[in-house]
Image (cartoon, rainbow, N blue to C red):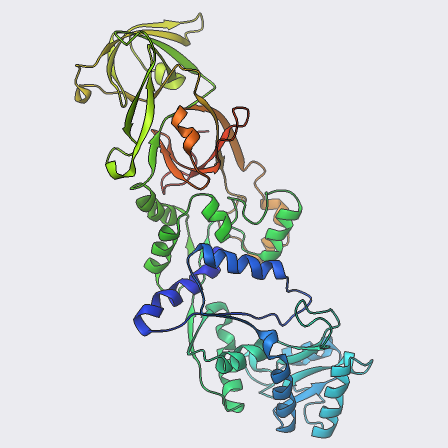
Amino acid sequence: GQLPNFKASSPRRAMKPSYQGKLLLRFDDTNPSKEKEEYEEAIVRDLASMQIVPVQVSHTSDWFDQLIEMATQMVKDGLAFVDPSPQEEQQALRMKKKPSPYRDQSVEENLRLWKEMQLASEEGLKCCMRAKIDPGSDNGAMRDPTIYRCNLTPHHSTKDKYKVYPTYDLCCPIVDSWEGVTHALRDRQYSDRDAQYAWFLEKLKLRKVHLWGFSRINFVRTLLSKRKLQWLVDQGRVDGWNDPRFPTVAGILRRGMTVEGLKKFILGMGASKNTNLMGWDKIWATNKAVIDATAHRYTALLSNGLVKVTLRGAPAEPYAESIFAHPKDESLGKKIRFFAPTVWLQAEDAETIAPGEEVTLMSWGNAIMDEVKKDASGKVVGIDATLNLQGSVKSTKKKLTWLADTPDLVNIELVDFDFLLTKDKIEPEDEERIETILNNDTKFVDAALGEAAMRQLQQGQIVQIERRGYYICDSPYVRAADPIRLLFVPDGKNMMGVKR
């Protein structure tokens, strides 16, 4: 399921406690050429991952027999006719607001052709059934829309039982009414079909359904076309439908979005009728407020450019202490932190240190940087320092992350992602030449070393790497040869953890 589509189910779910309502999930599997079971399975799985559980799951195909009976009755009542003219002719007349020449043919002839359609005979395959609404309407959706067409592709559920299939336009109002839907939340892009929806309910004397239109969320530099997303998967540009760069529920959860964060963002928007192009910063900032309270704190340093610091005044041998995993919430438990007479600093931090400067080693205390050693090019290659645990943390300008130089440091991959597209607003014509706006470099992997306690991370656990940002564990520790893989979780200000 895509993120914009989740907007429909979230307000529904929020309404349930207020109005004692029920959430119904129906798959409109009316086109056997398009529907795939794996799409349905993915939608159910995504809804479950969002803690949205419908009280009823149904398929439009459950109602195929009744829909055929309804269509037959529509023909008998003069509400529909069977049109044997070529599709191009039908389209041309629709554009001119002219009626089909077959619009007023006899009920008997319509029923005969309807039977041929159901048999998928040579004559029947040339036909479609259309509702008799108003061919001269200014609203194109009212110009005698197609409500049944032939399709010989076997249906994933009913196999080859039927040769005719109803259109979404016909099924939606009818099955909504039959299944007891009181409020149908619909994307505003279908608002031109609201009058058509009401026409079917009125003419077929069905219980009325209240339509509630909402705008879909459009995000910058984001591709929403299912067909084009599938193309990216097929081309190997991404790992699959749960790729962290994808605007799918599975993808965004894998990247570190939380259920609570996503719900807060969606409900904060409400069922707005205005379509806006949004940046990603607000949704990630909402998520940050959720994850900060529970993310355990750890230290990891980029492997490329580590500087060793020798600490006088430290115990001669490495030792371990149990410290709180989150400085502001002791209830989240403890972790083991190692201390040693030699520690590693990030090279970019070491480059800023002046000889004699007092700095704070986070989670330990102060140290005076006595001697900063540089090579011929001026690059810092080592530091001699004196531990000064009596020094005031408040007096230092630099609070530095460090790692004890011990053999149990763990290999880590820090992964950043960029947008798949180079353009903010995607126009319809862009989707047909998608290659021209594709970003070729969208995944960046940096090797790092992490503290030993990170071996305990679980897949899906979100942590904060001190002074770098939030990360979600995509691949936990299994063996020393395989690094732990952490994906950067955007926080509203930064989309990447390593500056480029």
